[in-house]
Length: 510
Ligand code: HEM
Image (tube, rainbow, N blue to C red; front, top):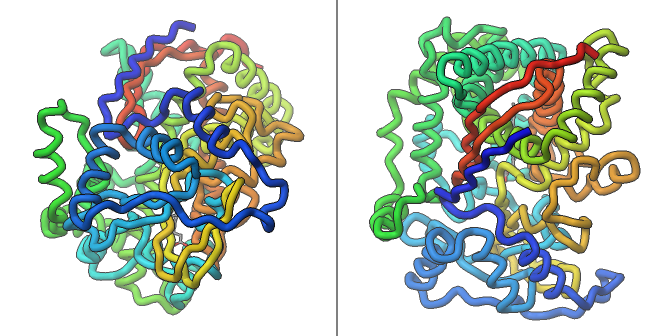
């Protein structure tokens, strides 16, 4: 297979630093491992917040423009010889009132973020700032609620039950979306000799979640027409802009920074688009909203939660996840494609179709999906506030964190921790096959361990198992149809932009 990879980092920030550099930094800063975390020496947390106002601005310029995301953290690990450090996180003044965090930059300290008895997850979904609730009908929706809030229990229960009730629809509905998407890609290829993978799979992600929540109603037959994904994109962008950069030439850095990080964008800019989305769900998600009402949820609040879960959580996550998956599988090359095609076709043939049981019997497909979720988590940062004074442990030391301090985990450094994973920077397709499954507890993309389950008392992604299933189905349908593919990609701040250059039709049936 011929790869034409344009790995231009036209981007918010480079995602992956020099692999050997990260390995070197992480492993050398932790060279004196202790075998028992309880006996680790207690150390003060190194690092500095700098001068008020100026410190956060200097840090955010380093983060976005001078060093880039990975190097920002790698350079501080090196400077302080520690994987738990103090720093400011963007956006800083004037959008966040307090940008100071304790950064957790290894796989040992990171899981404290999942300990809901000791950390609070109140309004921290986006970090040290929270977009106005006017973006969500003046409600604080589920993802911003802490586990101690009764409404979190109720709304999370609603989503978990809603997904469980619809589980039989997952496979046929998503395979239907895949069929349309691959047909669209083939059509674009025949007309233009290239196809816009991201656009096609953004539409597929929206289509799937809308139909799942709205009794299989196709959004194109509603007031949304084909506008749904664009309306959500604008709504997301206005909320998340302070965390982004357009990757413009250097000369524009200060203008961009001033423009998107001084004041938040007002929700009124997206009000009519949001209302259109709200109306679509209100009109068509009738069964789902009835389920909410029978649990005692306010109908208006339930519908805003549905729009948020469908638009922000599900569509926002999935539209980035499929490009990650295709990029890593594409880069792995022909040999992996042949192995995947062989496994997929053999198992589907034996099972007589694509069933949940068949998917369970595809160790390579499963491992590849987990490996992509490990190496490139779609939501790379997580925040939580200490509920009480607590002790955080890295591999080498323990650190006291005071009640109320903000903890921030940079997930790519946790899931590429060389003290946990061999060749942590390398995409190893079979990493989680057989014995390798024991490492799944270190895969953390869902705001929880892959071996844990989302529940109403934790903050793990409600769609965790659905996402894994959809990624497996994507690979299954890809390799039932095609032997291999050619692609280009451009790395962007929220993930790669992929252009498909060719698809080679499956040469064998099974
Ligand atoms: C690739 C796709 C997805 C990714 C990467 C993703 C990731 C995440 C993450 C990291 C969180 C925790 C955020 C935090 O508190 O720090 C989360 C929460 C959540 N996700 Fe997902 N998610 C995805 C898809 C979905 C889907 C398909 C659904 C449902 C249909 C969903 C529903 C939720 C909900 C309701 C929450 C809030 C959980 C709570 O507050 O307890 N997500 N997701």
